[in-house]
Image (tube, rainbow, N blue to C red):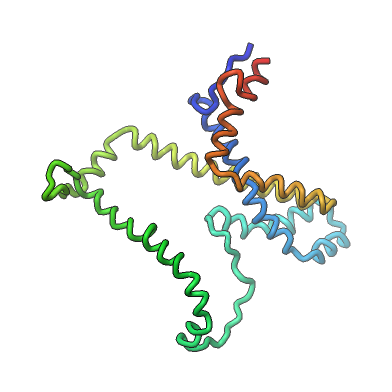
Length: 238
């Protein structure tokens, strides 16, 4: 008899559940990136390979996978901007001329620039609080400089190293799994003959990426619920 499993809270199952949720949510984005790369491959290369007698596996091994190599590196680095195949040098106009010609672009960019400074760069000054001890009872001077005492206290706790190890392990495995699944799905979609079916499948796979993590957590919270209301546990018990 199967017992209900607390997938999101059990020490033996929470990692597996976390990886499944991340693959479901993020693989679609990676698939779009790799499919864009596969679309850019010259069909003439595949035709030449067919004339030489190459089958599907050899085409995938010697044409498709090498074409994906650079994209995989960029994807794993978190940089989704592909380099241009050739750099063409243009003679630039004077700075004042360029500012005047594109003035309305800078006007539209101004609110974004202000928000970036206010919400991303100004809060960075708060990092200095890590070297102080806040004492609200001292109204005149609530901050007492402690140097590296806070860091020594943090590093001396065993919970810190456990959290640090888990974070590093989860991040690396999640990156490898998401990349692997995105590459596999992209290769499978690339082999589909029907264009309509390929677009439909690609859209369905990409849809979870638009869901917020709150909705995703709610969906999988119901699927992995430890009671009989959870779909997975209901299937296991029955």
